[in-house]
Length: 375
Image 1 (cartoon, rainbow, N blue to C red):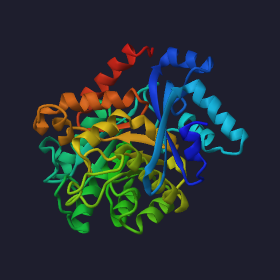
Image 2 (spheres, one colour; image 1 turned 135 degrees about the vertical axis):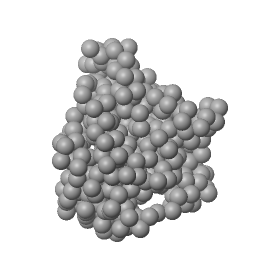
Image 3 (cartoon, rainbow, N blue to C red; image 1 turned 180 degrees about the horizontal axis):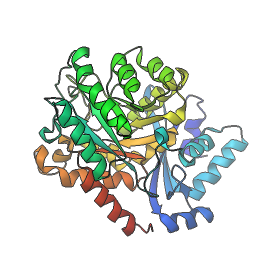
């Protein structure tokens, strides 16, 4: 019996699977057919090895991990299922299951994540180049991002940078709703970046398909019911505390597992509120209450979130965490790091990247796809 078997004797123990040895395109499909790899979210990427993490919630000292080939893990899971424990087989089923197009959107090509372009209708967002405080300027920027290759645009009227304070609900509505309405009328898929139910309601009524909430529908008690009744999709992000205080404590027992457990709980809560899982996505919240090393861990192993059975989103564009991993570059010099983060996420099969620099990201992804063996 392995240490993992011993820990799983506790029915409260939870499992997560970190994909390793990721293969792409034809090589991935050949390995899957031979039983040597497992697909990530239905392909076209596959993991040839997995690191299984197990621990008991609330007891971080009781934890272990096991790394083995995908075939060995699948066989081990089947043996445990025969003995009546389906936790591992259920985890692998969630990890490998194909994802329907999130919010009705399909990628432009196999292996290419959706590109979400950022439109900040704010005077104080962390990236000055993204600020479009004037309504017409924000609409024009959204149209430009769509022309540059964005699959959808994300409209935000509140800066959630570290240390920020929120505007009034009235101010946020005035900033967001006209931009959402204009871009939706131009047949552009729109997401609204808000944590307030009244803004969600008005934005969806104006044409937004997706609610992108940094509080994972937990901050406003009316948020989840609002999304459910509106029939919208939602992106659930991890954040510790409030934007004003989130960087005060960046300690975790294990940042990767803690964030995954939080998101699993928020997915369950959203489903219980009446939002189907296929309308939900998760975002690890890069820069929202994490240290530089924590952000690096999350970006480097974001593929673990496939085991939650929902679409996965990465939003790391231009963030200070990228500069912290390099030479402390200012926001205007973080495009190379932003592209590196997007490519790292794409190579782990994420379904969406949220970026400021759409044309550059689209080109980087196109080149990566060809080099990875996609037609």
